[in-house]
Image 1: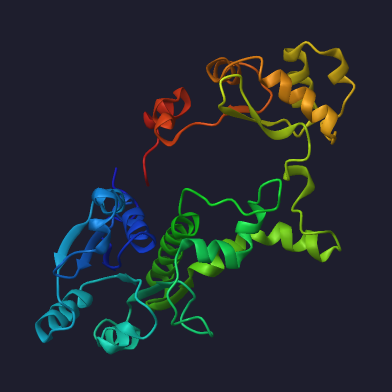
Image 2: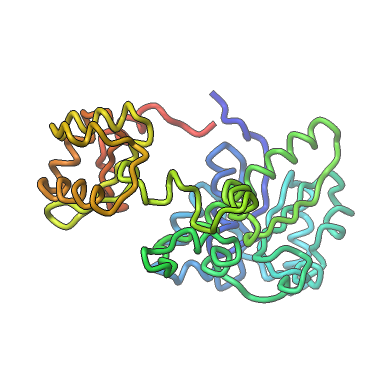
Length: 324
């Protein structure tokens, strides 16, 4: 069966992570993605042994062009004439200086879908400043929601804004392509990484507007004994997400503790939390891993990144899941 984006050509004029990830997603769905890199290559080739580049550019054709030269500029224009979409991640104004901004390419390809994915968008007081994932997490309010018990933001080990930015960019490009095929019109998309995680803060915004504190959504803030991260006997961690009473009941049944059955899944308290924490320390991580596979109480072990490939659930899904 043909993939959904078969026959679509995308020019990927991006580097590092968010733009390449967006382009890779389109390639996985069948688009022909041509990655335009400078003669020296995408800087991501030289990060972490090249793994960042390898992980986010699968399925693409790599073309090296010096866009600052007349020859490179002309080759880029010729490619644009054949493209359905283009995504770029330069700072605002750079593509215009190169003569490759939306208006310039629209002149040679009127129905082009052109996506600019940048840190702060094309307008605003921060638009032309440098920035990275940690900055976007901070400005979106997301980093504050990941604070430890002392209120200090936890430094994430992954680039969440970059990945969600790439995800949203690919989604909006597909939507613009659908519109293009319906109306014959191209589109210009201005996507700011700093705004993207803010779109996931809607629940917190409404909660704050109601007059509550900035502690986050009570049910999932980590205060409830039924929805928390617990340490195991061997110093690893598991998560309990038994928000509903039926799941808390199932967990208490497994624990064989009739006193806990009297508690609600909504129970908050340091004494109760300590009791449950002590119980989790009676088994090592592997034992809890096995419990999570059989007891219906919203229990999941905290896996290391490479361990997810070995988990039976993901192994089973790999046999059936394909990109459109």
